[in-house]
Image (cartoon, rainbow, N blue to C red; front, side):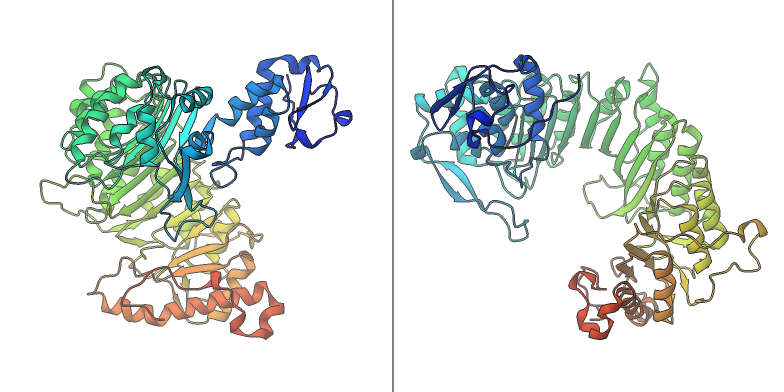
Length: 609
């Protein structure tokens, strides 16, 4: 049956004679008065169909768009007629943001507004106040709440706002027959559980829960011991979880152990995002038949060979997406190899003090060796996250240099869409290598090769190489490569380039690329470079060059070069603006928009401002 769509209007404001015949089965009520009694179309006498229609009104209703007050259209439908009331209320209360809706359905003397403590940097649409109880709930209050709590399917917090602790306390003091508080809850997203509120979390841990997303933030010292009992009870209280996102428990001495035990209750788990896991937890996840997405913090020196021997069937058979925080790339290679992982997406955050180009090559080779699925994403960046357990032995760097041969094993994945590598190492690349990469991976949408950190070698990629990549990868949306911008006349191939790589036409303009990262690219003529870039990227607005994020104080030569070349790239950016808007050129530099500023959002002692 095709879905019937209903316009989002307030039916109370429509004259009875203009209502279509399919709207109501009995009485039409507006402002408390009976207006008409007409027949309803038989299709809308099906409760399931009404539920489907009304649930569609929730689409696009977010915490910044009516989420705290509910959907006004559904509220109007619930008041329109008896047939609409129940399904409309079910849809209205299906997704609740904060605890405000519970309090605001009570008499006015039961609650009042207080400052929500929203930080200044929060979006302007973020509410600045929240509801809090004015008194203890009465029997009549609980009877009102009883009408709505069983309708809630998802509870979320408002970004930049905590759940009201006073409301949590009052809800926890309800009569015995009110628990579980939300008996049909399917999902909870609570990303800022404080140590004061940990004891209230079981209020929302129901047997019906399928989507569990909680994070214990900023809990240190006294109070951290409260995390462990909650973690150990998750499996018993919520046995049917399919999507688990649980973070911030690492400060508890046995947090990882308690969570690993709870995992054993979740037999239908499909997605798991956690911090550190014990060996038993990894073994159990490896045996799950439906686990497709996994994110965790990898402990160094984990013996994945031994863990593999404990899994009877093929491990991680359904796993396609992996995200890992780690400082042990050798351990990751063992994980991929011994578990024979075949992934479509992999995202790695590697501690910046434990990076080695040789180990990156080993990861790529392992993915290519065991990959039978089409890899779509290879994303690897350095990380300053300090929650990864430290190495117990000395870390030895085997190689500092990445080259085109480092990435060549990925060429088998012809449908790769994201190739993003930004690590603390050197990169050597020329036109030939870059064009070969583009020929092998024509579906790339995001191509970034150490452009944030800088290659630490002289780039041999010319404008011809850049143009050819844009021609061969027409789907590019994000680009980051280091460029030899000194060679401003290099739009044609050099003589030493193989003949079969010399005949590519000038590309059609790519209007999707608006941001370009060029690393430590050298430049002499900003005006000409702006014209070269504008010819193939006419929508380009911002260029990032010569970042100081990873600069070392002993790299004085690089600091001096940055002071020379970064202003020139800033001039390129201003030149692009003039080319995009020639009618503003006569107004001078003052016409540049603030959002087109060439400076990065960083503050350091090497600023050139």
